[in-house]
Length: 162
Length: 218
Image 1 (tube, chains in turn green, red):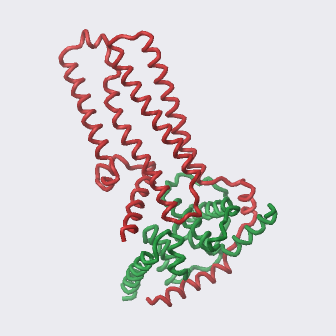
Image 2: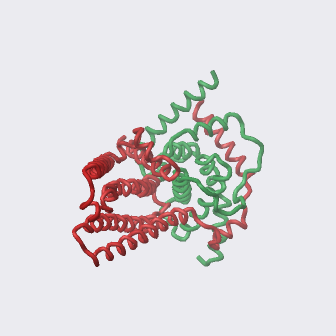
Image 3: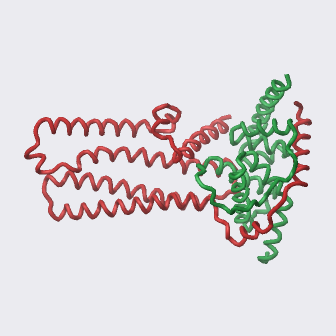
């Protein structure tokens, strides 16, 4: 692919999938300043891997793998400084979320890193096969985990509603 | 709450984001032209700082050992053995950190999450292994200064104190070396020693490796 074509193709890819990047970043990073850096890092790593994209994998699998890997690594890091660009690369300009969505997001943010990734992919309606592929686990393992997370979620929502 | 309801909440969120997310295309262009720095660089920069400090320390110790060898006496052996041990340890740490940088650069984020994160977490916990090994150099810091004057003029009190301090350091170093393991990461003494910002990522890596292990056992 010619450089200019590659640049445009990448821009289109990000534009078409900006929701994925935002949702992943939002699930792993509640702090606005840190999230800004995380989104930028995800896009930077996507760009670095873009030329090496292996078409044997689905594009969404590739995107989720990179976004989640960067987000989980970022989550483990000690954040001392904000050193990336001051500009915001991806910004949500909308009214506040519904109460139920806020509860769901809070539940997700309370999960452990891997369970959080599974829950996110489950809500994105990915098949067990694709979730297993993204995480590098077996489908049985994913099914067991999802079932446990759903149970916990149901309990949490029922406590709140009661 | 039923699955369908959950997914509907999420789908509505997705639709909302689709309309409300604004992408800064200028910044994407900056990323494409490599004007934006990666977080990975900061991680590597920290390790490079350790490599430079470790190398300078090893060079400094080597210079002192060379000077001591010129005027070699049986008493200077305490200093030489201590300095050489600390120097060797610094060199090993420098080599390990150079290997770290090479491994960090080899990490491919497009691999599966378990594979990538496991490699990263293992790398982070290696820092703990280096510190663990560094405890073994502690007793050398209690004998390097022994000299002819101390042997000729030192009284019994001095030697009792010296032997107690060295024995304490030997015992402490061995105990810490044997117990500074990931299995003890949740114990209070461990948390007391390894707290602070520098250890947060290592402790998170330890927790994460346990989480991965639990997944793989299922």
